[in-house]
Image (cartoon, rainbow, N blue to C red; front, top):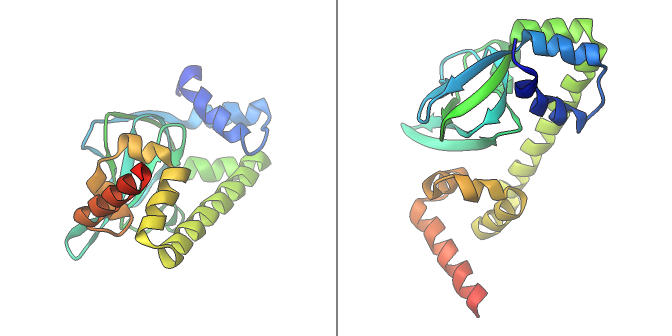
Length: 199
């Protein structure tokens, strides 16, 4: 079982969505385990089944997929948030994602079986699971709209506005990959915006 201090950030995150009774929190805390991932290590590798949902207490990660042998960055994950391959977690099928630590990472994790048990025993966790699923779907829809309807420059500006942590913690070539750009294309956008700002 993880400590109260390790569990406190997860508790605060859940409270943003709904208030759960103390026995619900206690049951979750008892089932969680601590895990560390060194910089460059992997929380999940493509081809593995995602066996748990992790909450990040320290560090940040990126998820990427291999497309024609090239790493394509899919998302970034920061402390104070959950990380999982939700599709693999639910279907019990191998993941197409790799979750790589961009610095030393500490997470607390609950397994698939324990999560299903919590859903059955505690209606509050069942409701929270639905709320999180809706939150994820909204995020995916917003990203898809951005990729379809915004120019690369508009996508860059939108990312700066909505996810400033990315620019403070993630190398530029990963940001370029996330935006579907070559690094040199991102450099041109940055120079153009910097020049426009000076005028």
